[in-house]
Length: 185
Image 1 (cartoon, helix red, strand yellow):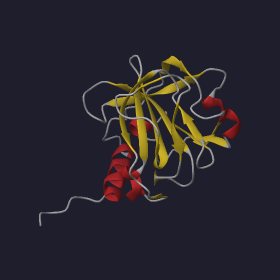
Image 2 (tube, helix red, strand yellow):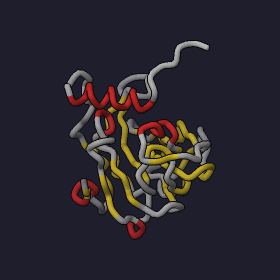
Image 3 (tube, one colour):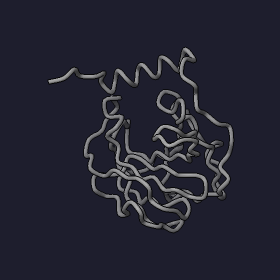
Image 4 (cartoon, helix red, strand yellow):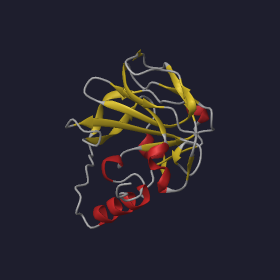
């Protein structure tokens, strides 16, 4: 058996340490999205909107979490093509070891992409390559991955390279809702 690399917890802690010491470029942006999105969950289901200063660092700095009950319907925030998804995890918890265990969907729009994470196990109802319409059901929220409780993680991404991490998050512009004014930290 070959050498085992650092654990996910160790990688997370190392990245956090390097960010704190400014040794890793913080890929943040104060720029707002060009697209005006609809909320990915019904406004009435939102208990709170948060952005964690612990986990939403680096290229996740503008990500937001909608605290909603598990099983809440999640909708495409704009028209686009599903470019990636994961729906095979049924584990999660408040430990960085679950960082890569969250079920997610990524939808590409005109120059921007949206990411949705923490879906229930096998409860994503779209497939990679599907064209989705704004407001179309894409799945049901859950509590998979690195999560302290049921919620929908949402981010607007602008890619600048070919890698999965080659993006910045933009501040999401929603119709009739200013998420950044309602954020609890």
